[in-house]
Length: 311
Image (tube, rainbow, N blue to C red):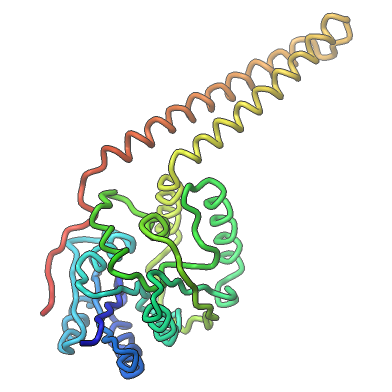
């Protein structure tokens, strides 16, 4: 019997793209079948306000397509988690409905998985399709994240990958209410191989569902999920500043003793204010370190609620 593979596709106000996505993946099914695998789709409607759910219901007339409707908009990360947890397949592939990533890469991912690799990532060789701002901001974010994260993310890799059931079933033990799936994937398993591809320039004429506000919110979640290492680095930085300020204070004190201090009183004011703010930042860092641990232990709310299913 062919091994089942589910392509998990979050949808938010992208109703016009659903049927086109089904058509693109349908073209791959014969090639996938030659690898003794069957390709299926799970659409996850993340509380869309357009006709996305109606389009998903229409697409679900195909036996290899089904859909899940969340009770409201929980975000792409939660939608991905909902689809993966609902899968009974031998492997899953997170994928974007807008087809920005070439669907043909899926065949290469499946081929690597059939060869015995448990997690195979799709690695972009360039970001020329993105705007200059998006390229630079993404580069800066991932550089910062990998400096502070306990589980660094592979460079130029998104959610697009194939994950074996032996790995993704571990998501049942993840109970965080806010998720950064790229970090979660690195936490539950290791990357065995990669498939390189070049992303073509997007042909979309509508507004992307991942706007700046959502991206900033995701960045905040990502930094929190990076763990206490972030606050340790802030604490170390503030201690270093304290040492520098202490040295400067000693220098000013020596000048005062020898009667060679200009702007009498100004230097003392600068030192006291700087020391106050640095100490305050140090205390906030410690509080952040403790609260991060407490928050990680206390999260228990579900990441999503399912309102309806097709089929």
